[in-house]
Length: 319
Length: 283
Image (tube, rainbow over all chains, first blue to last red; front, side, top):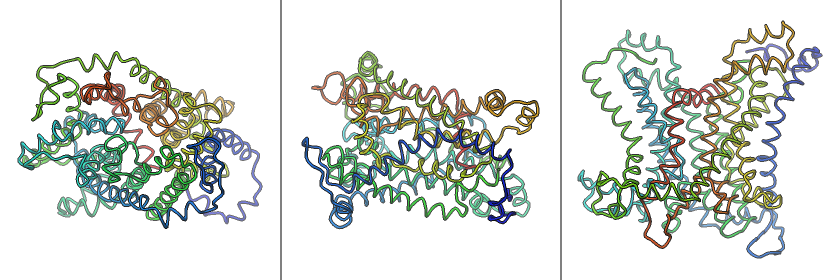
């Protein structure tokens, strides 16, 4: 694994590659090329194209409306004069903060349970895979039925348990809606977090726990001194992907609440989508899209730095 | 296993309780949707609502299952998800093999590209893709969903397969080389059969991911007969648009779309968990 640092990089570059190595590299590039081509064709080229569109004022509502070049004008408008964008940013951050906190606390509890040996693990595994495999819009439809203000089972259940004294309009009221949506999101994504954390826990050698038990460590100590530090990398990877998912979130609000009431649950992605396909402002919408992309890029960068080694670099150790 | 210590009776009861809570948490919304789909049309509007469908009524199911546009949506989704899975696997397995086994300059760049695509928000490229597909006359054409579907499933495909390829014993390939097999022969005749279980697991993950895609499906398909299942469920208005919201039919449609996925989960639960975590934990 340390082959690269062992040689001075310059020496290695100058060293003539053997025929064998050239052949291997050539073969590898042929194998890699189709996938890289697909990635460029449908991800990076369109991203560049989106940036190009974002420099223009484009309205497709009327045929033959000429494009007007604005330079960075669309970006300037977003940052200085777009209350709806600020609202969407606030909604998205609220979801990211609360939803992720809840998911990771619950996911950790689920994982600790699943990590125990017990009968019926298969049943738990199937149960936990159901919310994960479910299409988000389908789950949104399910929660619509559950949260219904008069016929919903959520109201009936809370009422029967004595938690509420009157039925609440969960997905109509400006106050409750975002929390109802977060609830639906936490339900759907906690299993994924739990699965990843369980996998992380199963890689911890049992000897560590045995040694800790001999030293008389409590369960609390074992969690914080062994389990938590050792699954930290897994935890950060899971956190990063969930964070990015929140910035991509569109299907849940579009079906469950339509972004409403008003704009109470309009996420960044949903707002962008509406500027593009409802207002047909392709230029301004593309600027919003590129902005969202940049936010995700920065978030990812921070997380990858927190992970210590870059995620992509970890392949070196197995070469 | 993390800890196989013997639990005390109280702990055991606590554990059983927690397990029950987890199972109920995961399945309760699902249960409620099934119940709603089995209720009589007017029973859905009882206030307070009832926890059980009494009497059980299959009307909603009968309506949904025989609705041509809903049947069409299920067929469309099957075609698209299968195509995406096959193409993504072909491109991804080649790339994953190179990453797992070969030395070549620029490997880190390829890995960085794959990582970047996995974080890509679909919304960032929806406007140019829409204009492009409109120019190419691909709106309402399945290719408009298969192309982005392949690109966006490639990261999962490459990671999962790379993890599987790395776990294969190297000696067999070396033996094949010694016996004079070419690189391509080694790949198709030695690695291929060995990697079959891993490829199969990856296929399930890709199929589920592709089946669930919503953003592109909603944008690039506007004709009713071209909708995919998730979009059909999202826009489902029931058989009679003038009637009150048909919650029973909506519930039946939701469950019907989910059944293929639940069957996959039931049969392949072990593999799915292994595949899902292979890329994320090791990568």
